[in-house]
Image (tube, rainbow, N blue to C red; front, side, top):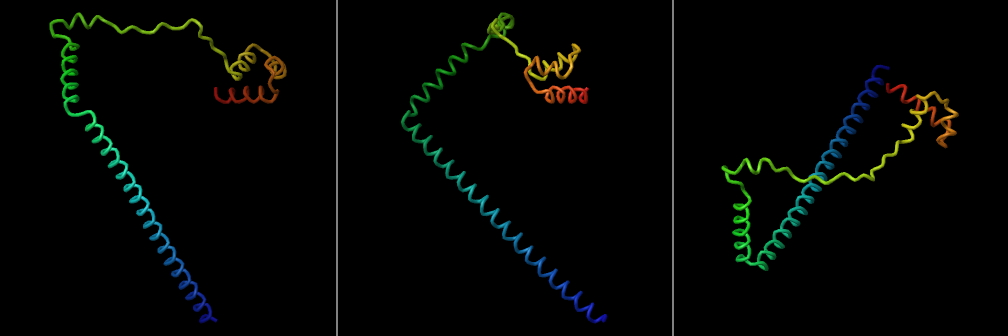
Length: 151
């Protein structure tokens, strides 16, 4: 009898080891697929990067290097003009940017939950709130109960 139990135990151990081996093989395959996918993505990014670099080279060739140098000198000259002198810094420190004026037509609309709670605070019942706001009684009751739990 004990020999039979040992035989069953041995078979179960062999089956378990075989299953573990198969799972390890599957994990290894998944890792290789993941590495292949990441390498494919990296290759795709490299291709896009090369295309963008080529487009930039073509654009630079069209514009020409002379226009780029002239533009750089013009930008430097305007930056020199716009930077304040240390002597006149007080003059620039007092200036504030012009802010756009607020529109007087702004309107605010309270949410349904806020209106329900406002009416409840005024002493109205669930049914009265539902009829005034044209919403369901259970909705009004639910909003009130949830607000009570949050406070």
